[in-house]
Length: 320
Image (cartoon, rainbow, N blue to C red; front, side):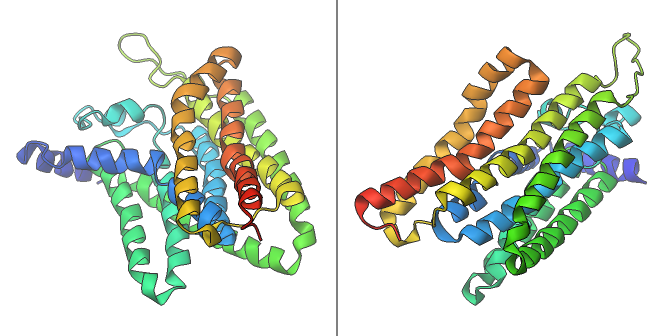
């Protein structure tokens, strides 16, 4: 049934001569490249707790998704059925295993977290619906492009919802017991290393195609796993540093100056992936290079740029 659904979408694509394909590719690319900028900006400029809520939900998914992918080792739809022909350039970013959808577990917790935040403001509830619709559209785009089955997307959405609930429960608990946060951070750090150990030593399918090449190279999939788990490790380190020594407050009191400063600070969030990551992976190799880059990348927007915001606020005399 899942393959037939993808074939139906494929026939529809062909019938309209791929008219919607560029839009669906844009939606997918936006999900993994730019969606995270919204909660980061919110964390810096508007509400620290709300921004962290969306980000923590995302990091829950970043820890669980690679473990599920590298445990299930389910092949992509076009590998399972040669009639499936992915649309456009989508196959380039859809390598490796299929289950669950990584694009979905990237976008849905971020969009969902911000949707929950917006729901608390009656004037902003329209944004909750828009963000929820975006998360669903991203999941659908993965089906439409032929790179994920409905099961991949459904489980990705389910995991995202569970992450949002878990993050909310964690925040409620830490509100009552703030002294316990360090123990949660330590436990998370240990889980990250156990996850790295698991995906490194476990056995993977080594099936070959007709050309004698691996259908899926486990090393490439492990690269993504190291990178995703590195994001969680980066958050844990940065969160500890920020709450112990930086303790910044969002700069919404700075008005337009704060907005411009925060928007400028988002530029490295995108550019570091293109310029710093290749240098680090070239130095340390794909596995450890991706992990270290992820740590540095997350440390920048959770701790380093907030430190800059605090220093600028003090110099301008507007810091609280």
